Structure formats: structure tokens, C-alpha cells
Image 1 (cartoon, rainbow, N blue to C red):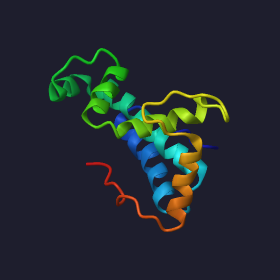
Image 2: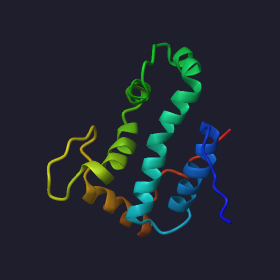
Image 3: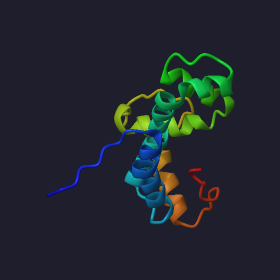
Image 4: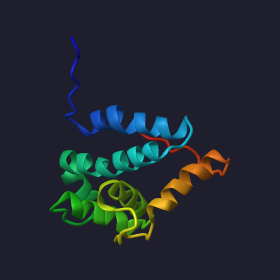
Amino acid sequence: MRRVRALNSAHGYFQEVLTPNRDSFFNSASTFDNVINLASALFHFHEWLYHEFRDELEQEIGVALPTAGAFWGAVHSKDTRFGYIRDVANASKHVTIGGKHTSSTGIILRQMDGIAKARDRGVRFRRKPRLGP
């Protein structure tokens, strides 16, 4: 019988979704799917954090956060590079090949593919991020 796992906390999402996608991206050859999977996992982590830690986040950031989107906006306003995470995650379902797109960073699918290929050619990106407590 197959064991079904349920996600019920930000920590669970981190352990079961985000960490395996991070490991897949940093510990193997880059592919379009592991780029998309990591970006999507990173982007959606904010929703888990928001729903579990809204009060603490509002206190830390110093503004009311009525929605998870408002939390993402606050994070993005602190460092606009977070826009790349959102744009890559959204590109997997909202951008059509050859079509027009809207993004906060101007990134396009060809650039995402180039990121994966550049990494495989030995281009060094920032070191592996430390995730977790």
C-alpha cells in the first residue's frame, strides 16, 4: 500500500517540496524542468509562510499584509531580484512561446534555458543557498 504524505505546514513544504527541488537543481545537470521546479517551489513558499506566520511577518516588516500577494510585494520591494523567481515560476504556465508576456524583470523563456545551459558549461552562479533553520 502506498503511503500518502500531506503538507500541513511551512516546514513540511520546505522539507518535502523546496529542499528536494533545490537539491535537484544544484546537484545535477541543469534542465528546463529543474529550473522551473525550483523557481515554482521558491515562489509558492511565500504562501505557506504567509498563512502560518502572518502576524510575525507583519510585525517584522512593519506593515499590514492582508494577502499573501501583499507579503510577496513587500519582499519584492526589499530586493527586486525576487522578481526573477516569480517570473520563472509564472513563465511555466502564463507565457506562450512566441507570444507577448509581462514580467517584472523582462526575463523570457530563452533566457531561462540559457541559465541552465550556462551552468552546465561551467558558468558559476552564487554558491548554493543555505535553506532552513
